[in-house]
Amino acid sequence: MQLHYLTAHQLHDMLVSKQISAEELTRAVFDRIEQVEEKIRAYVTLTQERALNYARLVDKARLAGEALPLMAGIPVAIKDNMCTKGVRTTCASKILYNYIPPYNATVIERLNEARTVMVGKTNLDEFAMGSSCENSAFFTTCNPWDTNRVPGGSSGGSAAAVAAGETILALGSDTGGSIRQPASFCGVVGMKPTYGAVSRYGLVAYASSLDQIGPFARDVTDCAMLLNVICGHDPLDSTSVPYDVPDYTAFLTGDVKGVKIGVPREYMGEGIDPAVKEVIKKAIDVYTGLGVVVEETTLPHTEYALPAYYLIAPAEASSNLARYDGVRYGYRAKDAGDLVDMFMQTRSEGFGAEVKRRIMLGTYALSAGYYDAYYNKALKVRTLIKTDFDRAFEQFDLLLGPTAPVTSFKRGEKVDDPLQMYMVDICTLAVNLAGIPAISIPAGIVDNLPVGLQLIGRPFGEGDILRAAHAFEQNTDYHCKLPE
Amino acid sequence: MISIKDVEHVALLARLTLTEDEKQIYSKQLSDILEHVHKLQDLNTDGIQPTAHVLPLKNVFREDRVGEHMPVDQVLANAPDRQDKFFKVPKIV
Image (cartoon, rainbow over all chains, first blue to last red; front, side):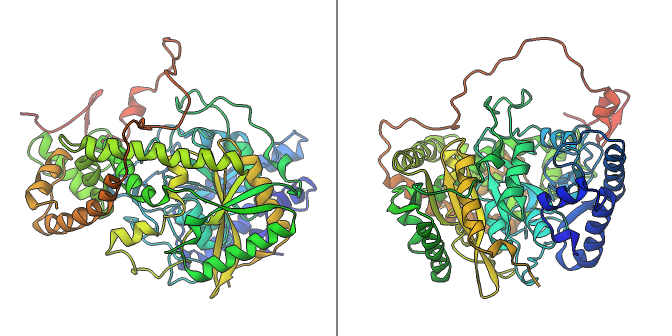
């Protein structure tokens, strides 16, 4: 029996019935890491000793008859842009290569309260800027389905770790598709919650009005369980929304009869690989067979999402990344003359090419004379994009389409052309601009590579998304497919 | 079109030093990206309110009370250079 490929809810049952101990489970995951990590390279930092200590404490508590949370003893991997007290947090950047946070992100506190076991910190595109993990300053993560291909990004390490059995669950962050797109490329479940549903306290900021932390899992039930742990208001994040968090597993009834799903024609048009489109059409047939009403709809401003995103996100990034100045933490250039010289050398040596590109773009868009033409214009277009979704949700409960226009591509294929790389996110960006929730679930295999189906919901409509995703999963077996 | 001079100006604003090669590359790549985003100008946005963030929240206040704070040594633990209880930086002028 391969423990490392089971789901959290299966493992929970085995832990509770004492078939296995948390320590055994943790060891099984680290054995698997030992076996495949050389090929996959999902982790920037592994925290084996810490993990075993946590697991032993869970086992001790269980033996003592203590009441334990549902997720106690379950291994979780964390994208390396979330602060972990005492554990290096690098954002896969040279500028933070030695940063050891003195505090935990709120999601880490919640995972600790839930008694989960952190496996390590996963690789990403530097500061979450990228779609392939190739922008990591340290190394590139490989797709477990084909190690010549990218795992997607920016949360590529978390997605690859779940797909390769190097963890059971993982957290990522999604600013323009950074959870959903790698989930699609690696054949796992990945969800971006509503903006404000999960605290961003301790998440290293990229574009603060778009960033959101979310789960990676092997199936929808695990995704709902992890969502239960991380969602909820946090006074430490002023953009965190006070709301009653439901038990998301309660939505997994299998009953979707009468649900209305819209398929935006813009998500099935030009630029989408025909083989991907076929997979999505088959998924629509599955839903129709379950009594779901599926109709075509439109999000007329979809083509403007990419240009709006690539003004808004870099503008916010240029401001957020001003804090890396070599004064309080991280890398500092040696032998700089005066203070400004030190700032400039530190930043030039510390940031990679894509990060500099986005800082430059954002600085330009915010600079005198261009603010109205670029940044403010993009914010107005953002309103139009959000209104598109509002209108669609007057008619439909959910929207459906591909997560990405393509399956995983080969390493090096798009690195020299930033615009080509940005295009990989055309199906996911608008969701972040509108602040609404969406999931990617495995929906098919094309040429031995997974294809993700995206379901988009109303603000705080995570439950409806999970219900529909779960119903699909109950009637297909794509989520059970494993890379060789 | 972003000229080399524009690139140099923006780099200074962003506190980045670029090599001659980088200036050439960014001049071309930023021009390409801006040409693409120029598409936004096709849309009439007269009378449309900008959306800076999507939340219905406004003015999130908390009580102004002294709370616990991090010990100085912990705050300074990541400092590239320090002296006593201070971050140390190169000369300013």
